[in-house]
Amino acid sequence: MEETRLADVVPVMRQEGLDAVALVPGANFRRIFGKDFHQNERPLVVLVTKAGKAVAVVPHLEFASFAKLDFKGEVFPWRDEQGFDAAFMAAGQAIGPLDRLGVEGQRMRVFEYLALARAFPGANLCDMHRPISQLRVVKRPGEVELLRRAIRVSEAALEATLAQVRVGQTETQIEGILLNELFAAGAEGLSFAPIVAAGSNCAQPHAKARPDYKVQPGDALLFDFGGTVQGYCADITRTVFIERVSDEDRAFYETVLAANERGRNAARPGLAAGDLDDLVLKVLETSPYGAFTRHKTGHGLGLDVHEDPYIMRGNTTPLQPGMVFTIEPGLYQLGKVGVRIEDDVVVTQDGVDVLTTFPRDLRIVAAAPR
Image (cartoon, helix red, strand yellow):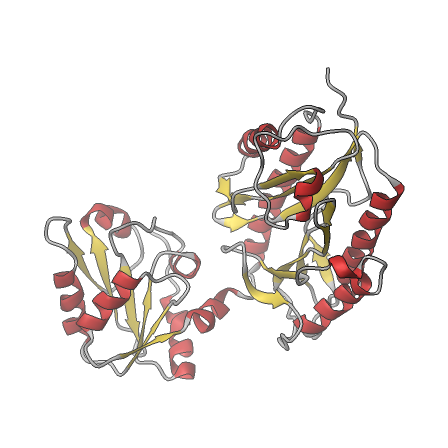
C-alpha cells in the first residue's frame, strides 16, 4: 500500500480557517497519496476535515485501485447506472455540516463542485488550490532525484533527435522522431505536448508543429519538451540552427544565453522570485532586442509542469532550498526568428544546482539531406 500524507493538509485547513478540503485527482492528490487517477466523467473525490476524518467518493470502476491506498477513512462507491449523487450525499452525512469547504479551483470540474454543494448545503466552497499546492513547493530529495531522471531521459532523446534532423523534413516529422526517442530513452509519459518549431514559427512561444513546412538551411529549430518519470516532469528548451547561422541571429541567440546565465548565477535562497525575474529580464530589455521580450523568466516544476514558485516580477516569495523551477528567457521577433533557452534548477543552501546538463552554446546542426 502507498503511504498517505493526508495529515499534511490539516495545518493548511487551520491556517485558512477551513472545516474540510476536497481533493480530486491531480498533482496534489498524487503528492498526498503517492498515486494518481485518471480524471474522466466519473468523479473521484476525497474529503478530509480539520479533525483528520476522511471519506472518499469512488467510482466502482476505480474501487480496486483505490483499495491499494493506505486510506483509513470510509469509502462510498457508486456505479454508473446509479449515478454519483447518492454517494456524495452519504459522504456529506458522514462528515456533517460544514461552514467552509476548500476545493482545488484549478483542478475541480463544475459537476464535482455542484455535487459537493448539494451534499453540503449552506457550506461556503472556497478556492484553496494555491494553499494546498504549497505542500509541494519544497521538494524532498527523492523528488529531486526523479526530476533529475526525467531530465536525463529527455536530454538523451534530444541528442538522438538532433542526429536525425535533415533539411527538407517537416516540423511534424521531427516532432515524431522526438516522441519516439523520448519513449525509447525511458520516458513514462509526456510533461506536455512538445513544441517543435522552425524558422519564423520559432517566434511563437507556444507554436504548433506544421506538417507543411520543410526545414531549410539557416533556420532556427526550437524544441520545448519533457518526459516524465513517476509523474515528475522535465521541461527543457533548446534552440539550434540548421547548417548555418547569420550574424544577426547569432547575436540574438547570445543575448538570450546571457540572460539565462544571469539567472543561473543569481538564483539563491532568500532572493525574491520577482527580483530574480527582474535581473534576467533586464539583460534582455537593455539589449538591442529588448522589444522582443514577451514573457517572464520561469515557473515551478514538479508533478505539474507549471506550478509555484512563478519567477515573475511582483512575486515577493523568497526562494527556499528545495524549490525547483525553470529559467527560460526568450526573444521573439514575429515573422522572423525566436530563441528560448530553458534550464531546470533546484535551490540549494547557497545557490542552485542546475539539473539540466544539455549544452547551451550555440549549436549548428549539420543536417544536409542524405
